[in-house]
Image (tube, rainbow, N blue to C red; front, side):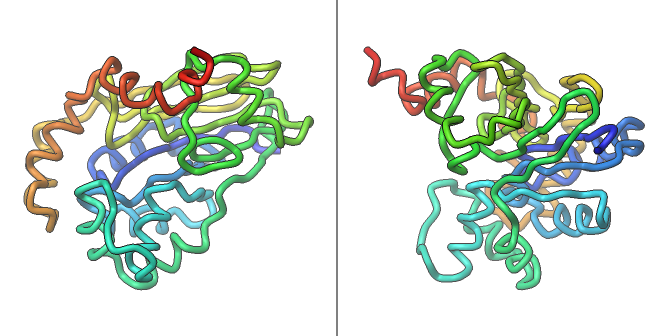
Length: 253
């Protein structure tokens, strides 16, 4: 059983946000740090992966859809990626880092003190880019959780970049939000599990981080990307408009 877990999701290759969260006392003291995917697709993928691999066995990794797409691009399995920053991120990665991302599991289960069996995934337990939201219907939750072991009491997922907790069909669902691409509210969002659930947000020097990203990254639009993403210029309304049609609700209309 693990006493306390820090959950870091959707880092998206933003080194200053990751450094700020790793400096938090509760993260430093956590028994494990679980990374719930979309780790490297962003302006500083090499630096982010190097920092995380330096954590050794304290870091438990899960692959997200954006990480999978980087691997597919580098392996010649696709010639484009919808996210404009992704080809730049893929090209920056060393071969050992591509190998690392390729080997990552898509989910894992840990017993966490106070929460029981906790399943960690990126989007949903069955798919790395499926959409569920805080206001998704119970019917939708029934679909995406249908194959989950009955022993699992808590589901931790990322992908939609908006933090929330909710009860769905008797299970607690936790989304820690995003470190590197927050929607609706600036800050590096993460979660602390055990014995309860805390949704946390770490503030850091966004202007300084954006300048550093613009200087470090090989992505030509890095300055504009950093300003938009780190300042959370994508509102929650924007995010819901994009995501809501993909969570099955239109079928019910």
